[in-house]
Image (cartoon, rainbow, N blue to C red; front, side, top):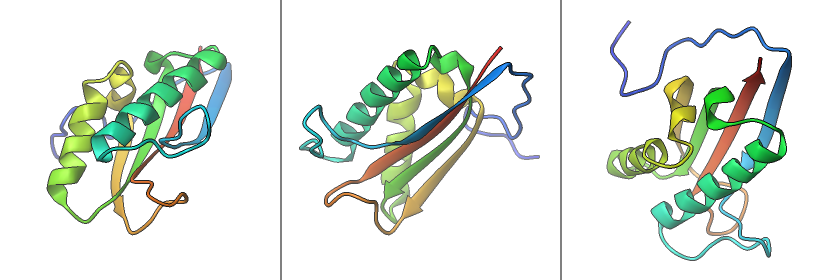
Length: 122
């Protein structure tokens, strides 16, 4: 298999509890899409994901799968989001099985990023 930029092709775990987060969106506490570009939205997704994981008693190290959706066709934008995520406070979450997708549209008007996360607690 080909070398990867930081993630693994396969993640195997024996878990006593599994945590599935709903798609984490770049929404602020008022439920509004944060202002700014794709990286500002990525930062909000990171913050929301960290909060959701902590609420479930999980950490980024417990994450076994991520799917990242970015509303773009541009490889440079996808790469910038990947770099921002892997350098963030939840960066270790992206060292497991991970998929990065460019998509046509996401659920909220103006939304550019969404993150789907699965964690397994041992």
